[in-house]
Length: 215
Ligand SMILES: NC(=O)c1ccc[n+]([C@@H]2O[C@H](COP(=O)([O-])OP(=O)(O)OC[C@H]3O[C@@H](n4cnc5c(N)ncnc54)[C@H](OP(=O)(O)O)[C@@H]3O)[C@@H](O)[C@H]2O)c1
Image 1 (cartoon, rainbow, N blue to C red):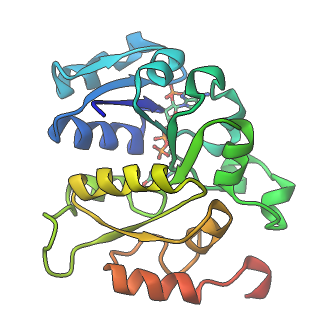
Image 2 (cartoon, helix red, strand yellow; image 1 turned 120 degrees about the vertical axis):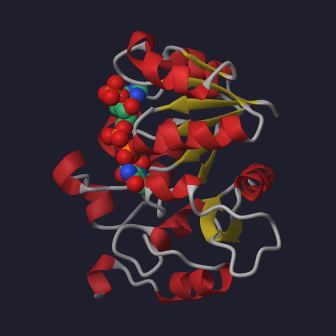
């Protein structure tokens, strides 16, 4: 595993790219406006980074991170992501994304929507509950006391293991919430969404999470 593809180069995408480059990965970064608009970020990131089209980033990545406003998830290309581990950072904000009935009634989750759109990819939810800026400030070496933890969820165990390994390199412990359908436990307005948490605290937060309708 040597290349991380990024679909989305905003707050989270640029930060994951910084983490990836500083940990020895190559990155191919894309956005909606095209590679020419990413020259400043590429200059900052240096020779391990290049800008590409969304298809380029999807094809180049051993792991591909989808980090765009949720409302655009159907624009993510399907074919170049076939068989790949795809990290989904996305959250649902109706004021930004418009109302999505199956998220409003909680019959599905954001990552399950992306998984349905990418049926042969292995989608893993990650990075959705940490503020972008903290991605490059809060990481600590493995074994550090009170190390910050991040939640993952996914249906493919090998894909989750790969993402856990990546998070560990980036400086974070991992708490596995289970399959994608359990990702609601770390969605907007749940106890673990946002604050700095150790693995033990995050496990408590996941257990304490309530469905929107039950609050
Ligand atoms: N900000 C945070 O702290 C944070 C934390 C955790 C999770 N999240 C979630 O992560 C996702 C990304 O958040 P963000 O704050 O990084 O967003 P952002 O700063 O608004 O950046 C969004 C990026 O997605 C790109 N994009 C939009 N539509 C696209 C498409 N169809 N194809 C390719 N690229 C596309 C945009 O490109 P253009 O600029 O060219 O349009 C931009 O680079 C959201 O779902 C958000 O809720 C955010």
